[in-house]
Image (cartoon, rainbow, N blue to C red; front, side):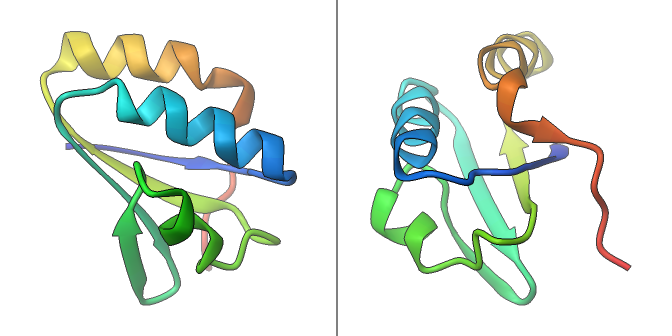
Length: 82
């Protein structure tokens, strides 16, 4: 499993992220505090606190994970929760 943070600040960014995640065949989860949702669900993402970086958990093979990370690189950030 791979984990990284993304920052989604606008509706268009959320929509683009969900469209990209939906093309993946494996499970992708978004985590904010204690709440986890399907990162392929636009409604699920809008239930999270988008003012903070969102932890993305990608469960797939490394080659697919690398391709996915490259596609969403513009949203990744180096944030971590204290």
